[in-house]
Length: 84
Image: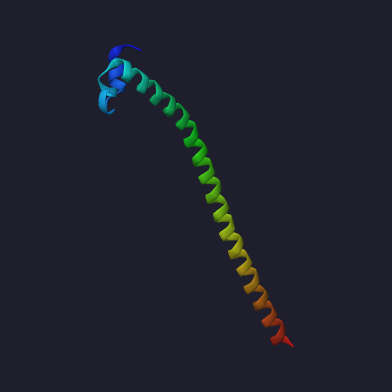
């Protein structure tokens, strides 16, 4: 990469990393490596959060279904007792 592009990418870095070409080049290269890695990690993290949310939702609905089944059983048993 040329000097102009390096300094443009190094904007916002601290110390000499923003205005000395040798240091800026190293820091920019490392920053690009981190950004490449973290784009993949972001997808991984979002997928795990998505799975957690799905599991939490199905867990809640499973509990609700159990409660409804229990309430229905009580209702039916009350009807059967009253019919005798």
